[in-house]
Image: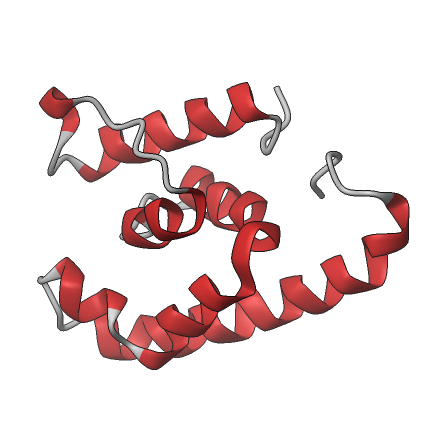
Length: 111
């Protein structure tokens, strides 16, 4: 789990992980038929993931490492960052790698 958080947040981390996994599962079915990222980002479970805030960033980045997917809107909304270079725009695998690299630099992802 994210090492940048104080140890007293462990129960919160576990709770956020469980919530993230549940909300991610809730996003999967309705989003598989959506090609528009904005429509995916407006799904209620996706919005609830954004609502968790900065604590969910390591979880999203771990998910991107496992399976590149449309988490970029959430990451940008939460972090107010966008490390994706223009030449990678629209290429999910490259966008995911840009975010994971950013996460390593920021301490959200283990080296």
